[in-house]
Amino acid sequence: MIDGKKVLLSGMQSTGIITLGNYLGALKNWVDLNDDESIQCFYAVMDLHSITVRQEPAALRKNGRILYALYIAAGLDPEKNCLFFQSHVPAHAQLAWILNCYTYMGEMNRMTQFKDKAAKHADNINTGLFTYPVLMAADILLYQADMVPVGKDQMQHLEIARDIAGRFNGIYGDVFTIPEAYIGKNGAKIMSLQDPSKKMSKSDENPNGSILLLDDMDTIMRKFKKAVTDSDGFIAYTDDKPGIKNLIDIYCASTGKTPDETVKEFDGCGYGTFKEAVGESVAAVLKPVQDKYHALIEDKAYVDSLMKENAEKASYYANKTLRKVMKKVGFIELPR
Ligand code: ATP
Ligand code: LTN
Image 1 (cartoon, rainbow, N blue to C red):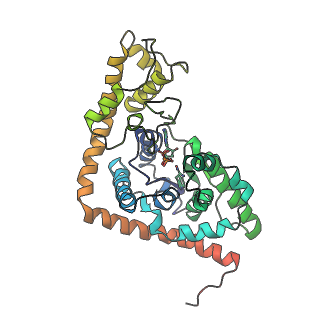
Image 2 (cartoon, helix red, strand yellow; image 1 turned 45 degrees about the horizontal axis):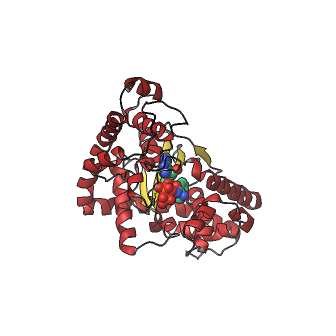
Image 3 (tube, rainbow, N blue to C red; image 1 turned 45 degrees about the vertical axis):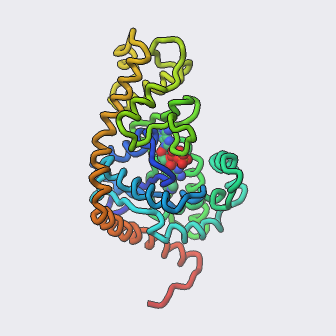
């Protein structure tokens, strides 16, 4: 609790420009919480997590700034939410080290994301990738978060965070709040436009599979036109038509309509007409975000000042927890 409010924490890695999937499945849900006065929200650019996969330094810097500006452009109010960079709060790495000593190899060995990413990056299976969930546990536990909005793919990591917190509390008393998953209103999982059996991802090698938040309007329309569908030629919302189903999900998430309404609206229309409508609905959602983003990214002084203020605010809460943990474990406090 902070000032009688529940605490919520989430974040994204700055490994590339975020996709429409990240926006509709995560960021938009966060924005919906803006006006909830009963919750104090923390959203971080998870740049420490990003280097579990090799990053080009200039690209990491650029993508971090872009993601930070996109958080704000998408509607996260920097006055109400604490928006910060994970690497600006050293307590994340410090607590992660301590929690590593309370986490078992067997637990990490079960993590499916590690297995997937290790297979994808066979030339760089580093120990950071292996202990990724411990750093994520530190992110969450430092702020005594009650709620963590994450997609299904991250549930296993959240479970581990709960297990680590419970184990630590079992040894040292009530140190950490045990976090719960928070499921947003819009749970849509957006799939790749080129392979609807795979989720849309910012690290997809096929650029046509993902709509990036900074894609211009022509690119958005072109990618939707190329979207993989089927040869039936009619619009229906069923698992047998994964390409069309995904387009309907995207249309619904962008317009607020239901799948039933959408199927009726496009009854008798060809795929070309439908794809164009989906593209236009997405372009209409992204245009204001992009306009705000372009204005913000020009105003470096303003963004820098927000970064600094928010890092200090986040550090205040994080250090409070870290001090408590260090004392419990038995480290000597520096005399004041
Ligand atoms: P990467 O490709 O670098 O692994 P990613 O695009 O899969 O990244 P993450 O940074 O792992 O995205 O996820 C950030 C947030 O966005 C998470 O809460 C995740 O559940 C959500 N998310 C990611 N992809 C999608 C998607 N296709 N549909 C809905 N939500 C998504
Ligand atoms: N692993 C998360 C990003 C992330 C996160 C967190 C999400 C890092 N630390 C703490 C919630 C809480 C992902 O979505 N890829």
